[in-house]
Image 1 (cartoon, each protein chain N blue to C red):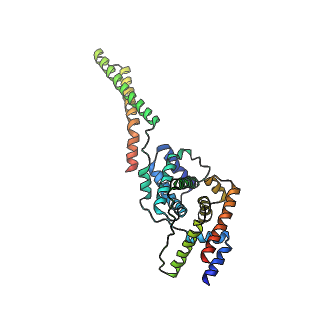
Image 2: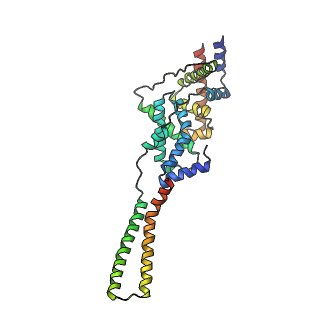
Image 3: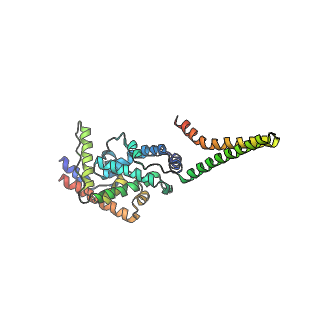
Length: 180
Length: 117
């Protein structure tokens, strides 16, 4: 993991010298987490995930001069990713997003349990609106504190908490209904 | 029976349960070994920096001016057929100026090549 100093040094190289190798290093560092985040938002749509994640990094590079360093670079990236996800939803509003459940084959009891958990997550996430889904994934999967989520989503604290609470209830209901 | 227990588990969903569920069972994006390369290929072309362009233009103008002045100075010296100490000092300054300006133009490219190597 990059230290804050290394991160700033790489960003400075990008800003001052248009250093693409430095930016490549930032992409390598942050792409696994960002792709996982987007992959969960898109309910396992791999091609859409790569589109959104790539677009996020390209937009980040274009706007890197506007990064003031008030938050971590990853927080700033997640904010761009959320906007790109919203744009993707808007673009696809005429054609509904493919939100088919991803079933995985289970080779052992352990795998079966994992597959069941994955399925539960997908069922739960499907019951949510895109905004709720974004908040749930940021809070429970990415472990982002509310302060960072406020920066990422540009929502006030109270709204985030009420969305999270509502989303949790919806997920619980969806998962309970599924098992009846 | 198992399903009933499972169902009840979710009726009382807590932050810890949900966090644990996500941490253990969240979808993992399939590996994409070419992701970084794809991003770098899609970046916009490098913009020619105006400041850098002006800097190089000034160096080139400086080199041309030095060469012209030196040539005129050499012609005048040859015409007078006498070389004074002043002439030697002027030649030394002109040569030093020429070498410095050339160094300023070439050095960044040499440094970049060394870094790449």
